[in-house]
Length: 354
Image (cartoon, rainbow, N blue to C red):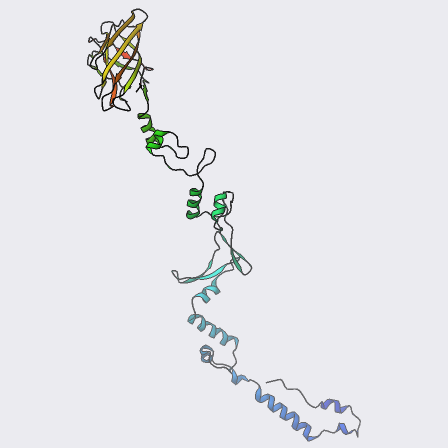
Protein backbone atom coordinates (compact mmCIF):
# COMPACT_ATOMS: atom_id res chain seq x y z
CA UNK A 1 0.00 0.00 0.00
CA UNK A 2 1.97 2.95 -1.38
CA UNK A 3 1.09 6.41 -2.73
CA UNK A 4 0.35 6.85 -6.51
CA UNK A 5 3.18 8.38 -8.61
CA UNK A 6 2.82 9.29 -12.31
CA UNK A 7 4.77 7.18 -14.78
CA UNK A 8 4.49 9.64 -17.75
CA UNK A 9 5.08 13.41 -17.48
CA UNK A 10 2.45 14.69 -19.89
CA UNK A 11 3.17 18.41 -19.24
CA UNK A 12 6.73 17.98 -20.44
CA UNK A 13 5.48 16.88 -23.84
CA UNK A 14 3.80 20.30 -24.36
CA UNK A 15 7.19 21.92 -24.61
CA UNK A 16 8.47 19.59 -27.34
CA UNK A 17 8.48 20.77 -31.01
CA UNK A 18 5.98 19.53 -33.49
CA UNK A 19 7.21 16.45 -35.18
CA UNK A 20 9.17 15.20 -32.18
CA UNK A 21 8.29 11.54 -31.72
CA UNK A 22 8.21 12.01 -27.90
CA UNK A 23 5.49 14.65 -28.26
CA UNK A 24 3.07 11.91 -29.22
CA UNK A 25 0.73 10.60 -26.49
CA UNK A 26 -0.05 6.94 -26.93
CA UNK A 27 -2.98 5.04 -25.56
CA UNK A 28 -0.57 2.71 -23.74
CA UNK A 29 0.61 5.68 -21.71
CA UNK A 30 -2.94 6.25 -20.48
CA UNK A 31 -3.42 2.55 -19.78
CA UNK A 32 -0.29 2.50 -17.63
CA UNK A 33 -1.39 5.54 -15.67
CA UNK A 34 -4.96 4.36 -15.16
CA UNK A 35 -3.77 0.89 -14.13
CA UNK A 36 -1.45 2.41 -11.54
CA UNK A 37 -4.28 4.60 -10.24
CA UNK A 38 -6.63 1.63 -9.99
CA UNK A 39 -4.04 -0.45 -8.16
CA UNK A 40 -3.31 2.22 -5.60
CA UNK A 41 -6.98 3.03 -5.05
CA UNK A 42 -7.66 -0.65 -4.41
CA UNK A 43 -4.91 -0.89 -1.78
CA UNK A 44 -5.72 2.34 0.14
CA UNK A 45 -8.01 2.55 3.20
CA UNK A 46 -11.16 4.57 2.81
CA UNK A 47 -13.91 5.75 5.16
CA UNK A 48 -15.45 2.33 5.03
CA UNK A 49 -12.37 0.92 6.68
CA UNK A 50 -12.82 2.88 9.97
CA UNK A 51 -13.34 0.71 13.07
CA UNK A 52 -16.67 0.80 14.81
CA UNK A 53 -16.89 1.34 18.58
CA UNK A 54 -17.58 -2.36 19.06
CA UNK A 55 -14.54 -3.28 17.00
CA UNK A 56 -12.38 -0.77 18.88
CA UNK A 57 -13.51 -2.05 22.28
CA UNK A 58 -13.15 -5.70 21.24
CA UNK A 59 -9.60 -5.14 20.03
CA UNK A 60 -9.66 -8.11 17.60
CA UNK A 61 -9.91 -6.47 14.12
CA UNK A 62 -6.50 -6.19 12.51
CA UNK A 63 -7.49 -4.28 9.32
CA UNK A 64 -9.83 -1.49 10.52
CA UNK A 65 -8.56 2.02 11.18
CA UNK A 66 -8.76 3.64 14.65
CA UNK A 67 -9.78 7.26 15.02
CA UNK A 68 -8.97 9.32 18.17
CA UNK A 69 -12.51 8.76 19.38
CA UNK A 70 -12.29 5.00 18.93
CA UNK A 71 -8.89 5.02 20.70
CA UNK A 72 -10.36 6.82 23.71
CA UNK A 73 -13.27 4.37 23.79
CA UNK A 74 -10.87 1.44 23.68
CA UNK A 75 -8.72 2.99 26.43
CA UNK A 76 -11.67 3.33 28.80
CA UNK A 77 -12.66 -0.31 28.35
CA UNK A 78 -9.06 -1.51 28.70
CA UNK A 79 -8.49 0.52 31.87
CA UNK A 80 -11.64 -0.91 33.44
CA UNK A 81 -10.53 -4.43 32.56
CA UNK A 82 -6.96 -3.90 33.76
CA UNK A 83 -7.33 -1.89 37.00
CA UNK A 84 -4.64 -2.33 39.68
CA UNK A 85 -0.93 -1.70 39.24
CA UNK A 86 -1.27 -0.14 35.77
CA UNK A 87 -4.08 2.14 36.84
CA UNK A 88 -2.24 3.04 40.04
CA UNK A 89 0.95 3.71 38.11
CA UNK A 90 -0.96 6.00 35.79
CA UNK A 91 -2.36 7.87 38.81
CA UNK A 92 0.95 8.19 40.68
CA UNK A 93 2.65 11.56 40.66
CA UNK A 94 6.31 12.02 39.91
CA UNK A 95 8.11 11.27 43.23
CA UNK A 96 11.01 13.47 42.29
CA UNK A 97 13.57 10.77 43.03
CA UNK A 98 14.54 7.14 42.45
CA UNK A 99 11.81 4.80 43.64
CA UNK A 100 10.74 1.15 43.37
CA UNK A 101 7.20 0.25 42.30
CA UNK A 102 5.46 -2.49 44.29
CA UNK A 103 2.04 -3.95 44.95
CA UNK A 104 0.65 -3.42 48.48
CA UNK A 105 -1.66 -6.39 48.83
CA UNK A 106 -3.13 -5.29 52.14
CA UNK A 107 -4.27 -2.01 50.58
CA UNK A 108 -4.82 -3.54 47.11
CA UNK A 109 -2.98 -0.69 45.48
CA UNK A 110 0.28 -0.02 43.63
CA UNK A 111 2.72 2.24 45.45
CA UNK A 112 6.23 3.55 45.42
CA UNK A 113 8.70 2.05 47.86
CA UNK A 114 10.77 4.55 49.78
CA UNK A 115 14.40 3.50 50.10
CA UNK A 116 15.11 3.15 53.81
CA UNK A 117 18.28 3.12 55.85
CA UNK A 118 21.20 1.02 54.62
CA UNK A 119 19.93 0.93 50.97
CA UNK A 120 20.46 3.20 47.99
CA UNK A 121 19.81 3.34 44.23
CA UNK A 122 22.58 4.30 41.84
CA UNK A 123 21.47 4.25 38.20
CA UNK A 124 19.95 0.81 37.71
CA UNK A 125 21.65 -0.74 40.76
CA UNK A 126 20.26 -1.18 44.28
CA UNK A 127 23.11 -1.21 46.77
CA UNK A 128 23.62 -1.32 50.51
CA UNK A 129 25.36 1.26 52.69
CA UNK A 130 28.25 0.34 54.96
CA UNK A 131 27.34 0.15 58.66
CA UNK A 132 29.06 2.61 61.00
CA UNK A 133 28.64 3.57 64.65
CA UNK A 134 26.15 6.24 63.58
CA UNK A 135 24.45 4.76 60.48
CA UNK A 136 22.60 1.55 59.62
CA UNK A 137 24.15 -0.59 56.93
CA UNK A 138 25.75 -3.87 55.98
CA UNK A 139 29.03 -5.09 57.43
CA UNK A 140 31.26 -8.09 56.96
CA UNK A 141 31.58 -10.69 59.74
CA UNK A 142 34.90 -10.60 61.54
CA UNK A 143 37.11 -13.68 61.48
CA UNK A 144 38.37 -15.25 64.71
CA UNK A 145 41.79 -13.77 64.04
CA UNK A 146 40.32 -10.27 63.61
CA UNK A 147 38.33 -10.63 66.85
CA UNK A 148 41.41 -11.80 68.73
CA UNK A 149 43.47 -8.89 67.41
CA UNK A 150 40.80 -6.46 68.60
CA UNK A 151 41.71 -3.54 66.33
CA UNK A 152 39.12 -3.82 63.53
CA UNK A 153 36.38 -1.16 63.74
CA UNK A 154 34.22 -2.05 60.70
CA UNK A 155 33.45 -5.77 60.98
CA UNK A 156 30.81 -7.52 63.12
CA UNK A 157 31.57 -9.94 65.96
CA UNK A 158 29.42 -13.07 66.19
CA UNK A 159 28.69 -14.98 69.42
CA UNK A 160 30.90 -17.85 68.22
CA UNK A 161 33.90 -15.63 67.54
CA UNK A 162 33.35 -13.77 70.82
CA UNK A 163 33.37 -17.03 72.82
CA UNK A 164 36.47 -18.16 70.95
CA UNK A 165 38.14 -14.86 71.77
CA UNK A 166 37.31 -14.95 75.48
CA UNK A 167 38.54 -18.55 75.68
CA UNK A 168 41.77 -17.53 74.02
CA UNK A 169 42.55 -14.36 75.97
CA UNK A 170 43.49 -15.33 79.49
CA UNK A 171 43.48 -12.62 82.11
CA UNK A 172 46.87 -11.65 83.50
CA UNK A 173 48.17 -8.88 85.72
CA UNK A 174 48.57 -6.70 82.62
CA UNK A 175 45.86 -7.98 80.24
CA UNK A 176 42.11 -8.23 80.42
CA UNK A 177 40.66 -11.63 79.64
CA UNK A 178 38.91 -14.68 81.00
CA UNK A 179 39.90 -16.52 84.14
CA UNK A 180 38.60 -19.46 86.13
CA UNK A 181 37.03 -18.98 89.56
CA UNK A 182 39.28 -20.32 92.30
CA UNK A 183 37.96 -23.00 94.62
CA UNK A 184 37.87 -22.45 98.37
CA UNK A 185 40.86 -24.76 98.76
CA UNK A 186 42.85 -22.78 96.19
CA UNK A 187 41.99 -19.50 97.93
CA UNK A 188 42.96 -20.92 101.31
CA UNK A 189 46.29 -22.19 99.93
CA UNK A 190 47.04 -18.74 98.52
CA UNK A 191 49.55 -19.73 95.82
CA UNK A 192 47.45 -19.66 92.64
CA UNK A 193 48.16 -16.64 90.41
CA UNK A 194 45.80 -17.44 87.49
CA UNK A 195 42.36 -17.84 89.07
CA UNK A 196 40.25 -15.12 90.67
CA UNK A 197 38.63 -14.88 94.10
CA UNK A 198 34.91 -14.31 94.74
CA UNK A 199 33.50 -12.55 97.82
CA UNK A 200 32.28 -15.92 99.10
CA UNK A 201 35.65 -17.68 98.89
CA UNK A 202 37.42 -14.61 100.26
CA UNK A 203 35.11 -14.58 103.28
CA UNK A 204 35.68 -18.30 103.74
CA UNK A 205 39.41 -17.76 103.83
CA UNK A 206 39.20 -14.86 106.25
CA UNK A 207 37.01 -16.89 108.56
CA UNK A 208 39.50 -19.73 108.55
CA UNK A 209 42.57 -17.50 108.89
CA UNK A 210 45.12 -17.67 111.70
CA UNK A 211 43.85 -14.33 113.02
CA UNK A 212 40.32 -13.01 113.37
CA UNK A 213 39.48 -9.47 114.51
CA UNK A 214 36.59 -7.05 114.79
CA UNK A 215 36.37 -3.27 115.37
CA UNK A 216 33.53 -1.44 117.13
CA UNK A 217 32.44 1.51 114.95
CA UNK A 218 29.77 3.16 117.11
CA UNK A 219 29.07 3.78 120.81
CA UNK A 220 26.77 1.37 122.66
CA UNK A 221 24.98 2.54 125.83
CA UNK A 222 22.81 0.86 128.50
CA UNK A 223 21.28 1.91 131.82
CA UNK A 224 19.50 0.09 134.67
CA UNK A 225 20.71 -3.25 133.26
CA UNK A 226 22.79 -5.89 135.09
CA UNK A 227 22.20 -8.75 132.62
CA UNK A 228 25.36 -9.69 130.74
CA UNK A 229 24.53 -9.37 127.03
CA UNK A 230 26.47 -9.71 123.79
CA UNK A 231 28.29 -6.60 122.61
CA UNK A 232 26.74 -5.37 119.36
CA UNK A 233 30.10 -5.53 117.52
CA UNK A 234 32.68 -7.44 119.57
CA UNK A 235 30.99 -10.77 119.06
CA UNK A 236 31.04 -13.93 117.00
CA UNK A 237 34.76 -14.19 116.20
CA UNK A 238 35.27 -17.61 114.65
CA UNK A 239 38.16 -19.90 115.64
CA UNK A 240 39.72 -21.72 112.69
CA UNK A 241 40.46 -25.12 114.21
CA UNK A 242 39.57 -27.22 117.20
CA UNK A 243 41.96 -28.34 119.95
CA UNK A 244 44.18 -25.32 119.25
CA UNK A 245 45.70 -22.67 121.49
CA UNK A 246 44.65 -19.06 120.89
CA UNK A 247 45.85 -15.69 122.11
CA UNK A 248 43.09 -13.16 122.83
CA UNK A 249 43.46 -9.41 122.99
CA UNK A 250 40.58 -7.02 123.69
CA UNK A 251 40.98 -3.29 124.27
CA UNK A 252 37.95 -1.10 124.80
CA UNK A 253 37.10 2.33 126.17
CA UNK A 254 34.26 2.41 128.67
CA UNK A 255 32.45 5.14 130.64
CA UNK A 256 30.04 4.42 133.51
CA UNK A 257 28.50 6.24 136.46
CA UNK A 258 30.31 5.56 139.77
CA UNK A 259 27.35 3.79 141.39
CA UNK A 260 26.97 1.20 138.62
CA UNK A 261 30.50 -0.14 138.24
CA UNK A 262 31.13 -2.42 135.22
CA UNK A 263 31.29 -6.15 134.62
CA UNK A 264 32.12 -8.24 131.54
CA UNK A 265 33.08 -11.72 130.45
CA UNK A 266 33.84 -13.81 127.38
CA UNK A 267 31.54 -16.60 126.26
CA UNK A 268 32.44 -19.45 123.93
CA UNK A 269 30.01 -21.43 121.79
CA UNK A 270 32.18 -24.48 122.58
CA UNK A 271 33.71 -24.76 126.06
CA UNK A 272 37.49 -24.08 126.05
CA UNK A 273 40.19 -25.32 128.43
CA UNK A 274 43.45 -23.90 129.75
CA UNK A 275 41.92 -20.46 130.15
CA UNK A 276 44.30 -17.77 131.43
CA UNK A 277 42.99 -14.24 130.92
CA UNK A 278 43.99 -10.99 132.61
CA UNK A 279 42.14 -7.70 132.64
CA UNK A 280 43.70 -4.32 133.38
CA UNK A 281 41.65 -1.13 133.66
CA UNK A 282 42.98 2.39 133.96
CA UNK A 283 41.48 5.89 134.27
CA UNK A 284 42.77 9.30 135.31
CA UNK A 285 41.35 9.26 138.84
CA UNK A 286 41.02 5.62 139.97
CA UNK A 287 44.42 4.39 138.83
CA UNK A 288 44.92 0.74 137.85
CA UNK A 289 42.68 -2.22 138.52
CA UNK A 290 44.02 -5.72 137.70
CA UNK A 291 42.02 -8.95 137.72
CA UNK A 292 42.49 -12.46 136.33
CA UNK A 293 40.46 -15.62 135.71
CA UNK A 294 41.32 -19.18 134.78
CA UNK A 295 37.81 -20.56 134.17
CA UNK A 296 35.67 -20.05 131.05
CA UNK A 297 32.70 -19.07 133.20
CA UNK A 298 34.52 -16.33 135.13
CA UNK A 299 33.68 -12.66 134.87
CA UNK A 300 35.52 -9.39 135.56
CA UNK A 301 34.18 -6.54 137.72
CA UNK A 302 35.78 -3.09 137.69
CA UNK A 303 35.03 -0.04 139.77
CA UNK A 304 33.91 3.06 137.91
CA UNK A 305 33.81 6.74 138.81
CA UNK A 306 32.15 8.39 135.82
CA UNK A 307 35.40 9.00 133.94
CA UNK A 308 36.63 7.18 130.84
CA UNK A 309 38.38 3.87 131.52
CA UNK A 310 40.61 1.89 129.19
CA UNK A 311 40.12 -1.86 129.53
CA UNK A 312 42.98 -4.04 128.29
CA UNK A 313 42.29 -7.77 128.28
CA UNK A 314 44.88 -10.37 127.21
CA UNK A 315 45.24 -14.09 127.65
CA UNK A 316 45.23 -17.54 126.14
CA UNK A 317 42.86 -20.48 125.90
CA UNK A 318 42.55 -23.79 124.13
CA UNK A 319 39.55 -24.57 121.94
CA UNK A 320 37.54 -27.72 122.28
CA UNK A 321 37.35 -30.40 119.60
CA UNK A 322 34.95 -28.11 117.72
CA UNK A 323 36.37 -24.57 117.18
CA UNK A 324 33.25 -22.44 117.73
CA UNK A 325 33.03 -18.67 118.35
CA UNK A 326 33.93 -16.20 121.10
CA UNK A 327 31.87 -13.12 122.15
CA UNK A 328 32.28 -10.26 124.64
CA UNK A 329 29.36 -9.72 127.06
CA UNK A 330 29.00 -6.78 129.45
CA UNK A 331 26.54 -4.95 131.76
CA UNK A 332 26.30 -2.71 134.83
CA UNK A 333 27.39 -4.50 137.98
CA UNK A 334 24.84 -2.55 140.05
CA UNK A 335 21.66 -1.32 138.41
CA UNK A 336 21.68 2.45 138.01
CA UNK A 337 19.76 4.92 135.87
CA UNK A 338 22.97 6.56 134.69
CA UNK A 339 24.57 5.61 131.40
CA UNK A 340 27.16 2.90 130.92
CA UNK A 341 28.83 3.11 127.50
CA UNK A 342 31.36 1.06 125.52
CA UNK A 343 32.78 3.46 122.92
CA UNK A 344 33.59 3.21 119.22
CA UNK A 345 37.21 2.31 118.50
CA UNK A 346 37.19 -0.69 120.83
CA UNK A 347 38.36 -3.93 119.24
CA UNK A 348 38.87 -7.65 119.87
CA UNK A 349 41.34 -9.98 118.17
CA UNK A 350 42.22 -13.69 118.48
CA UNK A 351 45.34 -15.28 117.01
CA UNK A 352 46.02 -18.98 116.60
CA UNK A 353 49.18 -20.11 118.38
CA UNK A 354 49.16 -23.87 117.75
